Image 1 (spheres, rainbow, N blue to C red):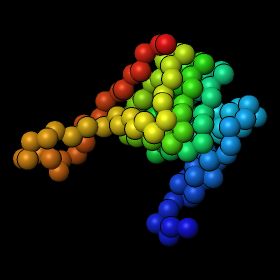
Image 2: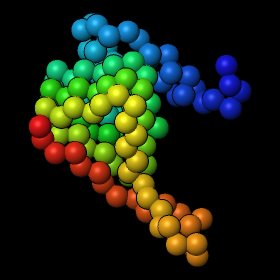
Image 3: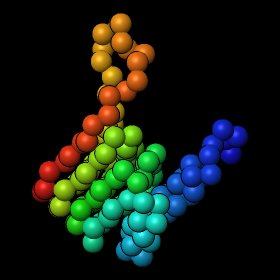
Image 4: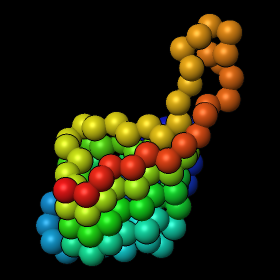
Length: 117
């Protein structure tokens, strides 16, 4: 175990690495709701999901999230109905300018929206 890991990181690693099964899909969605995320019905979350700010995540109904997905929700992320997020996708809702003068500045926060279907 990594000594720098926070309590949430340990919990996240253990919960979201559960195997694929309908029972675990519902349980993972329930756990995300308790952590502050807004989760629709019939959401399928494969093992390996990592979210750093669950309270800034909105997942609508009938969404499938593949294996080993990283959601950087420092800004907000909204995933629309019937969307599929493929395996090993990284969604980053904060961005930085590439110019050298402000590269090390604070990240610009915004909302990332993945539309329906």
